[in-house]
Image 1 (cartoon, rainbow, N blue to C red):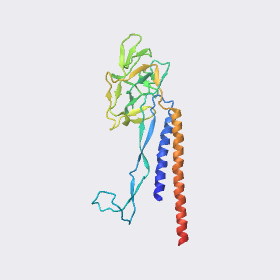
Image 2 (cartoon, one colour; image 1 turned 180 degrees about the vertical axis):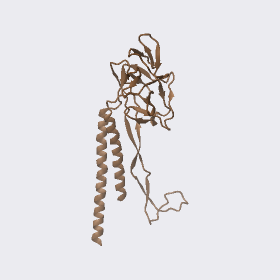
Image 3 (spheres, helix red, strand yellow; image 1 turned 90 degrees about the vertical axis):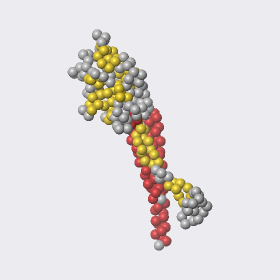
Image 4 (tube, one colour; image 1 turned 90 degrees about the horizontal axis):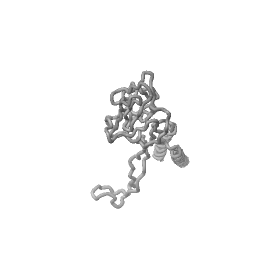
Length: 265
């Protein structure tokens, strides 16, 4: 019965992790370029139960010397394995800014931060005081030739990420767009940044054919579906309550056992 407490408690902890992921998704439903997370749980190894002190028919291959009949298996609960990010494409929202750009397809735009190079799909940019293209947080956006410097916002962004001046028609730079061998292992950082990990592998510049399509004057919205997240929240609450009732039932049985043992003595 004590094991039942631990099994129920592990289930409650797992549901709490799911609830944390759902809450974070709902909090970022309006965050540009946000990708929703899903809590992935794994079960502990099952325990094989046998009847002690009772000989029976061999249940295992001959020669093991084990005659105890197998009763069955019992689960030992679950634990949160990881928070898995769903990289589904978000929808596009039009803006009134020429320096905004949305990514249609896999890939990230490189950004320079004090902690090093980071990567984002948040294409809501602004023109800084020194003519440097920046994120809304003030971090410089990187082009293939370094920082992207603009004289004004009269630019044209082509589908391959090229930035051209509307006045002269000349190429200013092209967005530094990167890809990873294992995007699922990228680490979230801040509101809309990603950083590489040993499991994701280093970034490589996306060449022709693997670059995402750039849409000027648009931003990519969050891929969070509010209705689905609310339904999952209800499921989590019910599962949490079910595990809670399991613990209460185990506690009631244990109390009854202790009371009867005391009376017998």
